[in-house]
Image (cartoon, rainbow, N blue to C red; front, top):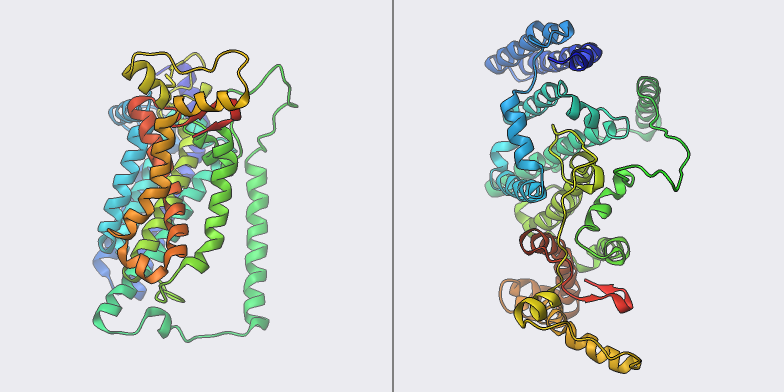
Length: 447
């Protein structure tokens, strides 16, 4: 144990000890609630024992600050995670792994939304977070004042996703049995004044107190005034723009910063006019709106939230991928080959140079040579956006087409295909280093 690591563990022992006390309290409350309200004695005993383990073992060991006794994530696991998520293949493993997790959670949703399983997974995640905090590199990222809210948002997102999914699973079971929905049994109403207003006032006071404590405990992440001769490395956008910054790896700036965000806004505005399914209004359900549920969850969780997490915790200096327990070495350089589709076709396939207009040619001649150079990409993109929607209308989406009509279906299918461009471009970048399918830098048109 190096001296600086010993000093680091001494500096965080109070935080970790208090953290495990908080986890113990959480489980004691859960055990009491199970025993008092659900009469689930065995489950209450189990979580009471877990709370005792937190407060009787993990917390004292953390308060000790002794590196030999302080609970930490095993080095073997840390090395394995760094190998899997670090390096040039880290984004592939991360994204493909999360897609697999998303599929498993969806297919096994009736099991994973069950209260004991969900509470167990929450404890497992919180325990893994606490054990990982003893790693100096992980702590520097997760405990950074900028990133603390993002860590909290990840857990809040998981909680509210579980709440909505649990309600939807219960409603689907009731619908299958012919029983009334959960929402139909919630007949209790209260007056806005004074009941609702008092509740909102209490929440406002509590939230204000929480923010004051937060502002005192965590120093504001302010840096020196901006200077053109000294830029941060990595230079990151605010967390809510990190998804767009990550998209710059796969798209041209105008596409990632203008076209895609605009289509997201337009697509969300168009949902009420495109939706033809009358079911699911006013209550949670998955079975009755499976396509809508999968599309939204995949687009929001997999194609947006995971990009924010990737940009926050795994993107380091020079925008390289680092493992969560890996030191951010500014000297780490991983060269990426940017190869366009036209270069694959002409240089590697035809063994010829890219078509180029003669010097002094007029605009029409230059346009002809650009089309000759990029004809394959243009054909593929037009086929994807123009020919594929009618093909989907007569095959897998035939029922959608019959119910939606031509115009609504074409708008919906094209919005869906544009959304799927992101995972397609990510896969092309990872497998064959393809940067652009269509590369026309003369007119700033790259896709």
